[in-house]
Image 1: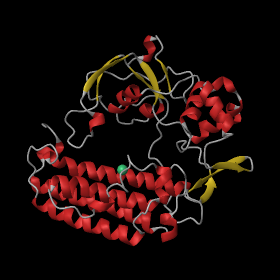
Image 2: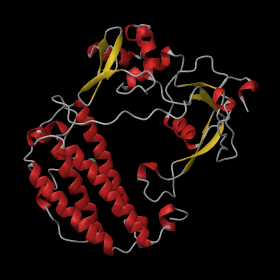
Image 3: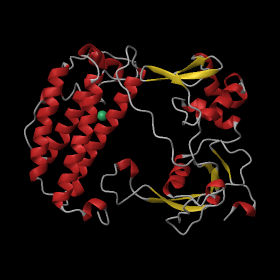
Image 4: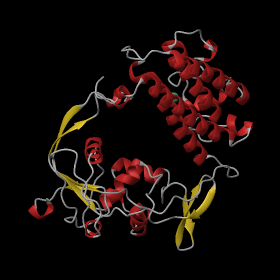
Amino acid sequence: MTGTINHELGAEQLRSRIAAELDRTRARTTLLTDAVDETDLMRQHSPIMSPLVWDLAHVGNQEELWLVRDVGGRPAVRHDIDDLYDAFKQPRKDRPSLPLLPPEEARAYLATVRDKVHDLLDRVPFTDRPLVADGFAFGMILQHEQQHDETMLATHQLRSGPAVLGAPPPPEPRSRVPGEVLVPAGPFTMGTSTDPWALDNERPAHTVELPAYVIDAAPVTNGRYREFIADGGYDDPRWWSPAGWRHRTEVELTAPMHWRRDGDGWAYQRFGRWSPVRDDEPVVHVCYFESQAYAAWAGRRLPTEAEWEKAARWTPAPVGPAATRGATRTRPSSTRTWGSATCGRRRWAAIRPAPRRSACTS
Ligand SMILES: [Fe+2]
């Protein structure tokens, strides 16, 4: 691997970075699992999620398999639980009935594994061996635990019972990102061959050619989505694919999950607490079919993965009111250019083909 951030760090700096990330991530895991009692940890809160205590011990088991045993070549801590915490062998629906480690035993197991990993981290040489080059396996395990933290956060959102998580409201944005951007036709590099901690599904870097398209500069907001609802979007099969309409009918979708009517408006349940829906927040907890229907109603469509990645890889030049307020105009990081967003007729949908108008290019 060449030209990577980690490669430029010395081994000691890399060890420090990994150790800090291990601690930061484990603090989050601990917060999410200490927030509820033992009964709650063992319970399955949704058929599509694991009991939180399964996630907890699974995180430790993956860390043991990859770092203690594979990287360190050290004896197993708990060989007997490998099958229990193998996500390929144990479907989520079956996990509550497994003989899982009780919470205290799971916590002690994680602590034992983590002690061994810190000891290993102090000694391991970062050679060219693929598992250890640039600290790859450590990065992979860190990302794995962070992914399970996201999963556990989703379980908390689906959990019923008294609220146990809280967070201050997000800060007000320093600037709004209005409108849309034109992404010109041409090739771009998708994926990576150099990011040292990238997983195999992001490799290798390869060239993808795309036609021009226009994409919103920011996610669809609750406010815009409420317009779709108010316009009868959930009651009009024109906006839904056949499969989407079947799903909408079968499960009786009428609004995003966790929304309910509140007088003339809407309220939203966030980790067990209800509050008014904020129009300027991105809409969340809508499924693929709802997103597809919204985009069709708005005269757009959802972006493909390649279109999303190409748009996300470059910083668009500010357009419209932001530019006139003297906002920084950021140069694209390639020779390709971004166009003006002022050619959009409707400004709040996902994506649409680029119009053939010269006024739309800059
Ligand atoms: Fe996992």
